[in-house]
Image 1: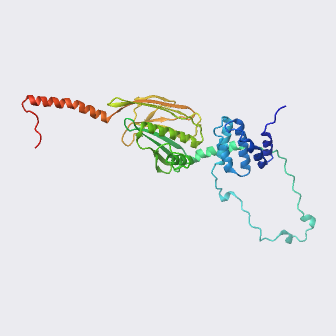
Image 2: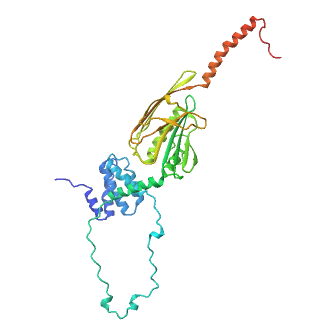
Image 3: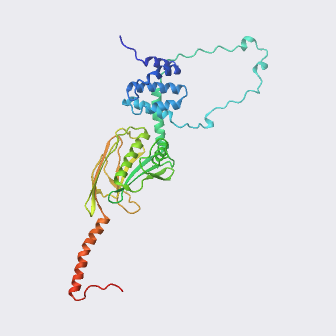
Length: 377
């Protein structure tokens, strides 16, 4: 005997438009099914559709947000599409798009005008029977079409988003991390506002990954750390990248950062390996992601894939900078090795070389009979 699908009765109730019955059938089952599984995701999609039918869009959106990490790619895409529809901004309709009927309260009724008309002629005709229609189905396909249209409109009307993450090398063992978020529309996007607030420690329930300080105006935000030891700066970089993935609803893998530094007195040999797995991030038109290295020479780059590094416009101090574009949908790997001179080491070496020269000049002076230099009176 084939066991009936426990969601079949809920689907039939959804086809009949009985949204309350759908929720009563599915709410006891959601605790038993994880949103990461296909069965749990399908159950929550049915609940979100029923909540939309009751006008409870906030609860429907919360139900869809829990499905962005579902292992089933098809159901995950349906949840994202439905979430785009629920979170789409409400557009104001121009007044000339609607037809306004005049107020008929003060007009003379027709009964008073046609008093001589017989009762049979005053009877209203029987309305025609309604056309036959099929049962109501869940609007998943329609939601996908609407989501695609909204995504295209957001791309055309919302402009481009440029994200630049800069690693600034301030000498041996010292780094500075900054994120520049620039929008062509001149206004901050919702994700941009949440990300800047979270980095600055102003988002409730989200701990800042480092001592980031915001600056800039609307549409062009800059959040940066002070100059920190290399370990603290790279930890802030990893935390900020993970935070960006969580706020965007994309389950990105944790970045891999390997840092090595060896001191040779006159300077240090630095080696950095950075691996960013962006396979879960889909290609979005107008999204430009890149990492800027300042100052770094092209010869210091050992590997850059899948995109090669390119020269970036010099900074205010004239430093040579490199731009590494990030490619969504792929694993991005960067390896570099460079040498940094140490001012303290160079000064110590200069003193060590000058001391024998000074002692030699003093010995020559004594041989010539001048003796030791006199101290000032």
